[in-house]
Image (cartoon, rainbow, N blue to C red; front, side, top):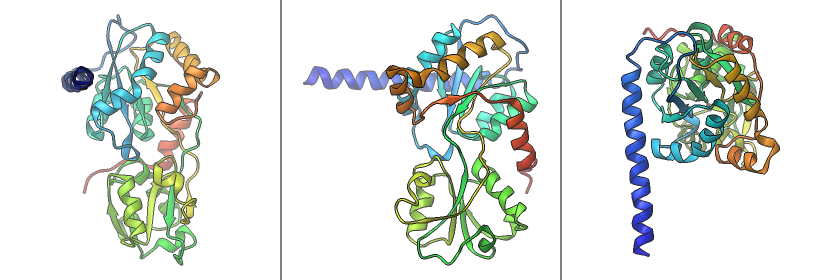
Length: 295
């Protein structure tokens, strides 16, 4: 028993050190200028960001996506270093400088900007439809998005993907987010808990989050749902050739057709992938509006 215990501890310790080292290396890479066009490939960075719907540390992300990364590696024919990126600012900066060869991210707006501004190309998106949901408790008098005016609202972090979608939805309904009583929280599980305990009148969550998936099943109501938006896209930098993108795309779309592939998808919380286009991401940004973080 002792040998087994210490063996597991040693593995986890090595994973933690390895992941931290990769994160440090990636931060250093983020300072370098972007590399244009396919380059000689020996070791590339694959970044993962689960946004506010996920709450994993770096080691947990490594363990969850390790097998998935091996599938991508086989299709790409190049070794990948997996890096967990929780800080949106780091993700945006590293995408701008071309540090990441591949990025899989729940917040699709950052990857849409990467496609528009930095030469990245879409590979696939998750098959599951994604929406921002305005949720209320069962006995709430609120019935539509128009009813949220003047109410206590809780959203994901300001300027986060779901916040931007909610802002666009309210704008389209002639309601200014800036003029309302809005509180932001990073973790969507915390948003759900706050709603259940009556701290707010209405909340914004992602349909693919734990709260979003179970809210109506547990008796709550959804009073507004956004148009479908890209869900968990994978994008490739200019370091990856079109031929390589095609191979990765074909391999990931085929995952759901094998028992092994289904197990890998289940481990990362997805049911499958589908092809997408750059236009879908450009249309998303047009609808969201320009991101202006100036106070």
